[in-house]
Structures are given as C-alpha cells and as structure tokens.
Amino acid sequence: MDARYLICSVFLFNIMSLNGQKAMNFYECLELAYSRNLTIKQAYLGKDRAASLSKVAMYNFTPSLNASMGYTFNFGLNIDPVRNVIGRETRQIGNIGINTQWILFDGLQNTSNLKRARYSLMAETENIENAKNELTLSLAQAYLQVLINEELLMIAEEQLRLTEKQMKRMEELVKAGVQAEVQLQEFQAQYYREQQNAVVARNTLEIARLQLANQMVFDDYERLRITPLSSELPVIDFSSRSPSDLFREASENNPSLKTAYLREEAGRFEVRQALGARYPLIALVAGISTNYANSVPNVTGTQNVTLPIGITQDGIPVFTTVTQPVIDSENPIKPFRNQVVDNVNEFLGVSVQIPLWSRYQISNTIENARINYEISKLNTQQTQITLYQNIQQAHAQFLAAKSGLEASIKAERAARTAFENAEQRFSGGLLDQVQLESFKINYANAQSQLTRNRYEYIFRSKIIEFILTNTINL
Image 1 (spheres, rainbow, N blue to C red):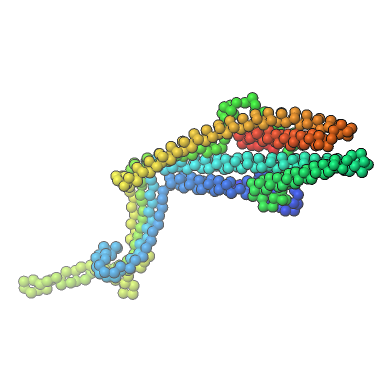
Image 2 (cartoon, one colour):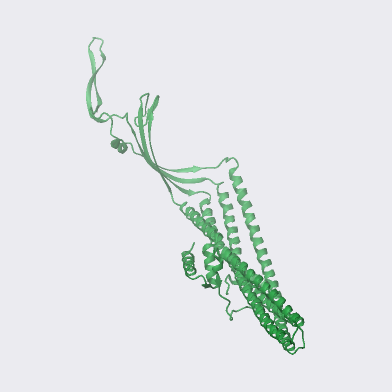
C-alpha cells in the first residue's frame, strides 16, 4: 500500500483522538477509508503478487545455476568412481558439482509468459483504482446522507422551536381569557408530536453517521463529525448529454473496463504460452564436477621392481622390470583436497527435449487456457454492458433528480408563502389552530423534500462526473 495512505490515516487518527469534535471534509474521510479498507488492501496485495510473478517471468530468460554435493557410505558390491574398480570394499564417496542450463528456444513460452505477467500486473494496478472508485461512490453517498439528515434534523428542531413559541403565546392568550383551553391543548399535542419527530430525525442521523463510519472503518462513530458542502459547489448539468456520448467518454478512463481489457490480453498470451509447450526445448548445458573416494591410494611416486616371470627350458629364472606406484606409508589415502583438484570433470553441450507423449497434459493446458481466454472476453463484454447500463441509469436518475429539484423549489416557495400568510391570518383570528397546523406541516414537508431533492441532484450529478473522470468534487 502507498505510504501516504498510512501516514494520512495516522495523522487523522491523532487529530480526532485529541479533539473528538474535529470535523472532517469528504477527502479526509476518503483518505482514511482508503488506508483502512480491506478490499483495497487486498487489491494492493494482488498487485504485489503480480509484480513478483512479472519479475520471475523476466528472470526466466537468464541461465539457471545449480550446485550439488553429497557424501555416501557404500557397502557390498560397488564401484570406485575414481579408479572405476569394482569390489566389495566399504567405501566413502563424496561429490561436488555445479551445472547450468540456458534455454535457447522453448516455443516462445518464456516470451509469452513475460507478456502475460506484465498485462496481469497492469490489470492489478487498474484493479486498485477500481476498488477505490467503488469505495469512493459508496462513501460519497454515505457522506451526503449524513448531510441530508443533519439538515432534516435542523428543520425538525426549527419546527419544534416555532411550535414551542406559538404554544407559549397561546398560554398567555388562555390566561388572558382570549382563547379557550382546548386551543392550548392542541398546541401541546402538536409540540409533543414534533418533539418525537425531532427524536426520530436525530436517531436517523446517528444511523447515517454509523454507516459512514463503517465505510471508513472508524470505530467511535459518535465522535465523527463532517463539514458541510461548499455553497459554491459546482454541479454540472448533464441533461443535454446522451448516454451513448457519456459511455464513449467514460470508456477511455474507466478502471473496471481497463482491468477487463488487460486481463483479456493476459489470457491471450496464456494461450500462446500453452501452445509453446508443443515445440522442442533446446538448451545450452554446461557443468563442472569432482569427487572423492577413501579407497584412492596416496601415490607419492614410482619405483622399478624386478619380478620373476618364469624359467627357461634350461631351468634358468627369467626376470622383468616393472614400474609400481609408491604409496605414502604415513598417509596411504589420497587427501580430499588433492582428489578434488585432480578429479575435476567439465562438460559443455546442447540439450534437446522433444515432447512426444505427455499423457494429454499439454492438450489439457491449451484447452484450459483457451477457455480462460474466452471467459476473459465475455467478462470484458459484460463489463462494457454493465458500464453502459450504469450510465443509462445514472443519466435517468439525474434527469429525475433535476425535475424533482425544480418542482420542490417551487413547492417550498409556495408552501413558505402560504404558511407566512396563514400566520398573519391566525394572529388576526381568521384561522384556527388546526388550519394553521396544516399550513405548517405542509411547509415542513416541503422543506424536507427540498433538502432531499437538492442532495439527490448533487449526488446524481457527481455520479456521472465521477464515471467520466474518476474524481469527485465534494
């Protein structure tokens, strides 16, 4: 994971620990969520794994180098590896060797595997952005939902304060004998209803704040506070754009579509790699080795020895002179260091392996690779369809939100005017409390609906903006 996310997470946590009322803006919430989200962490691990596989694929072009050593005790009938003498002596044999293999041709398997690994790495990199995008949209919706409920709570509390003010005024009128007791009781009943509405609005806000905290993996949601949106928040009107135009623009930058394309390319090279297994494997091989045996005598030189080989017909002995090795009497076994130096064996050659019958394993690998490739192509098509459908839905929801906002602005303006007029008529005795309450409820409902529609319009606009640019401005 990028270090900046971890640093940001620790920084934000320390600030909020010192001040429980510290308000966070959307981007601070998003950075904190990025640093703690498990799906994003898994995506980073997927990228690390793909990077490791890409590195392995690159090093497959280099020669292999292996070293071996061993030491054995041989009993019974065995062969001295140094003198190539068979016998039943108990022997101790040691060997050391280094060998290398450099693949010259493998049906382009290594080349295809490297390209496949690189496409997979690029796909996993895009998948990180895709995971971030999904979290960003989800967090933006939760963030706006908190703001909506905060405003709805303010409206409910304002209505409660207004009713309380009217109730106190009615108490004075009842005491003065101007109004009947029943009018005060109706105001008191309405006050308790609106008090209940305020409690419900506060509970709804706490639930929304909990959902936002869950998105951020923030434990103490009661300390979570967020900043309101800027009054100059730019909102783009997409009503003149068609879904097809939006899809063409979004296709160029959409990380989920890029991920699908890259995985499809990786699948294509997986097929090529599998097909390469049908070709011969040609490699340059080389090695050097040596050995040791405790049955090799330590010869220090030679000496001429005269030996009888027979007699003549006259009975005269016949002798011959032969050369025999001289064995060191103190160290009769040739030392290990000397044997290692003297017994060196080197080789250099070309190895060719031709696949004749692999028990159908090569064919199965090719078939599975082709199936995986077809699946990746279908996934790409499905991603395109899903993206277009999401754009269609987002565009339709934007148009609906725009129409709803325009209607709610007019409705709120009319309800406010009607309520203000009703208050004046109630003060003049032209309306009773029940009629005034009806205007008041209509005005409160219009305010709440305007708040919902305003945030709905903002959110629907930001969704389309985010689909096109992969960034969100809140």
